Every structure is written in structure tokens, then in C-alpha cells.
Image (cartoon, rainbow, N blue to C red; front, side, top):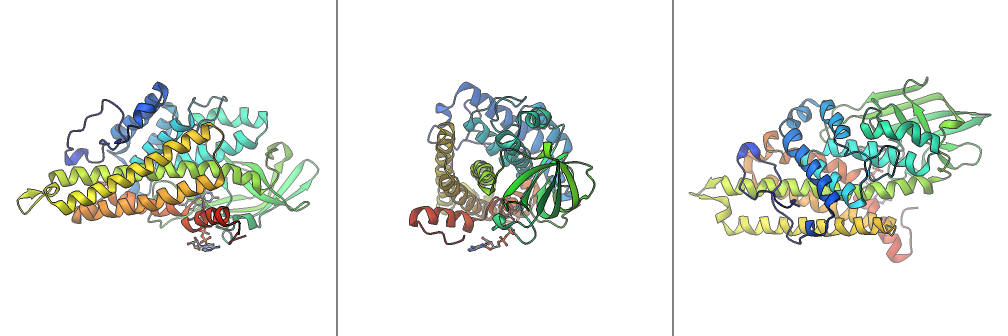
Length: 405
Ligand SMILES: Cc1cc2nc3c(=O)[nH]c(=O)nc-3n(C[C@H](O)[C@H](O)[C@H](O)COP(=O)(O)OP(=O)(O)OC[C@H]3O[C@@H](n4cnc5c(N)ncnc54)[C@H](O)[C@@H]3O)c2cc1C
């Protein structure tokens, strides 16, 4: 989508990736001035600061620290959490931020998904007032980093079966287990660790602080996707956590699932950002690339492909706009979030694949961005529950039969 007042001029190759107009259904007209302002802030950050440099970070698999700190300075981190130093944001504004950041880069989008959507929201939704006051203001500024450790080497889609244990002895809990794929797990200051209480068998959440004895995090190297955010393989050996660091609102896996429903919604917005980027780049490229003595947009097959990409982007936008409204009204359900995540990551994959092909050989060069989106959408399609798992969540709702639990 394009904020009002933005140029629709064809791009130069050096500017490729900048946002063009995709807002055919006039969604921007329905946004409040505050939502438009946040959107512009995120968009300008992506266009002016992220796109010129992100390819290098991605290629070298380096964390873009200066860009991550800018997110805090620009008040883009908070996911709509109220108070505690978090920037005020409606659900739609938070969604627009996810969309724009992912239009720039999936790793930066995922960083905010982990920091705000998973770690901060766990504390905001399930933490005590003291825990919120201690962690949230600095996490919003990105001077403190958070992580969310749920997935285990043996339990991904069936995370509910997690084996990490938490045993209470007076005011101290002892945690033992392994976690895999944990974003910010190697660099986080506070890790939300999900573990099973050995007394009542319920899943509970614990805040494990950086430097705690027995916490080891190894970076997962060799990734072909989301290369500029790091995930960790965590080993927790007799990690001791004070009762004051247990999330009091996390009483069972149902509470974990409440956090995850919100982040699936954010992933749907993020997938839209990837699709918008791919469409924008493909259109700009086809407006400039000449073959058979004409620019590619002169060919009907090329126009048809671009139009189908645009139609998918528009349908994703409408889903996201409605997601924001439902969230605002407190009416977002697991099923709705699952449909949105499943639909938007699948559609984004298709749109990006079309764009990759329309760029010909240049489509595999990082300078043209599309190959980075193509690689990144693969992880996004998988995390927070694969397309299949989202489908089964929806299938359970429409048939009344759970095919997976
Ligand atoms: C880049 C990245 C970042 C991540 N970040 C985090 C994080 O910060 N914190 C965190 O806790 N986790 C994180 N994850 C973990 C992520 O949520 C899991 O990878 C995801 O849920 C899938 O689990 P899995 O990889 O173990 O795949 P599996 O569960 O082993 O699935 C393998 C395949 O089997 C299919 N499958 C599984 N069950 C069924 C079934 N019942 N019926 C049909 N098909 C089925 C799946 O759809 C998939 O195609 C991250 C993952 C990645 C890749």
C-alpha cells in the first residue's frame, strides 16, 4: 500500500524496492492521522535506511545493529502494548509497521516479531506489574533485547508436548531442557522460557536473564533464510530462576497460545510486506527492461502476470485491514489468525516466485532484493506454525474434528 502523497514515478534500478502504489481499494483513506504517521515513519525508515544496506548484512549473515537500534529511536517497537513506555499504536498501526519492515527485510521484521510480538507481549499479557515495569520500557527502546523460547529439537508443530521441565523448591525454580530456533536466543537480555511444571504438569513461562548460570546458547549457522537475524539452540542445565521471574498469568499452554494468536496476525501483515516488495520490484523492473525492442510491460503476458500479482496483494491487504479491525474490537480468534497467516504466507510465496522469474537472471542477485524475499518467506511460512498446522486449526473449526491433537 502507498501512503497518500507518495510518488508513482517509475523507479531507477538503483532505487528498486521503493514502495509504489498498490492501494487500489483505498485502504489508506480509512486510516487515522496517527496510523498514517506511523506508517510513513516505518516506510521512510525502510526506503532511506534499510534498503540501501540490508543486502550486505544478509549476505554476511550479520545482525544489523544500527538499524535495530533505530527501530527504538523511531518508536516502532511495542506492538500496540499500552503504557510502560511503549509507543501508542492501534492494532492497524502495529500491523502497518510489521508490513513495512518486512517490505524492507524479513530479518528486521522477524526481529520486531520476536522482540515485541513474542517477548514483550508475553510479559505484557502474562507478567506482573513489576515485571512489566522492569522490562517493557527498555525493550521498547531496543536497549534491552528479548527472546521467546518455546520450540524444542523434538517438538516444533507439537510444541504443546514440550519436555523442558521446571521444578519448584521454595521460592526457586530449576529449569532443564533444550530449545531450538530461538530468535535473539544468543543475544537476548531476557528469555521467556516455556517449561512444564513437574508438580502439576502444566506449561508455565519464566523470565531467564542473561548471564544466568546453566544457560547456554549456540548460534544456528548455515541458514539460507532470514540471514540477518540469529536464532539460537539453547541448552538449559539446572538453570535457577526466582519465583519473582515466573510469569504469573501463564498457567497452562492455553496462555502461551494466546500470545501466539496475536503474532500469527502480525505474520500475516509481514507476509503482505514481502508480497508488496516483490510486486513493486517486478513492476519497476518490467517498466525499464527492454527485450525485443520494447520494455517488458508492452507484452500482454507480462501485464497479465503483474495484474494477478497485484490482485493477490490487494486481497492480502483487505484481510489485514479487517484483522486490525477485529483485533481492535477484541474479536480476533485463533481460527481467523490461522486463516490469515496461512493465506498470506502462501500468497506471498507465489507473488515472490512470479517476481523472481520476471526479473530473469537479475532475479537471483541480492541487489534486486527479490531473491532475499524469496529465501526469507520460506522461514516465515514455517514459523509460528506451518501452513499445514494453520490449515488443521481451521479444519478443526469447520468440522469440529481435531486432526492433530
Ligand atoms: C527462522 C526461524 C525462526 C524461529 N523462531 C522461533 C522463536 O523465536 N521461538 C520459538 O519458540 N520457535 C521459533 N521457531 C520455530 C518454529 O515455530 C518451528 O520451526 C515451526 O513451528 C515448525 O516446527 P518444526 O521446524 O519442528 O517442523 P515439524 O513440526 O517437524 O514439521 C515438519 C513438517 O511436518 C508437517 N507436520 C507436522 N505435524 C503435522 C500433522 N499433524 N499433519 C500434517 N503435517 C504435519 C509440518 O507442516 C512440516 O511441513 C523458528 C523457526 C524458524 C525456522
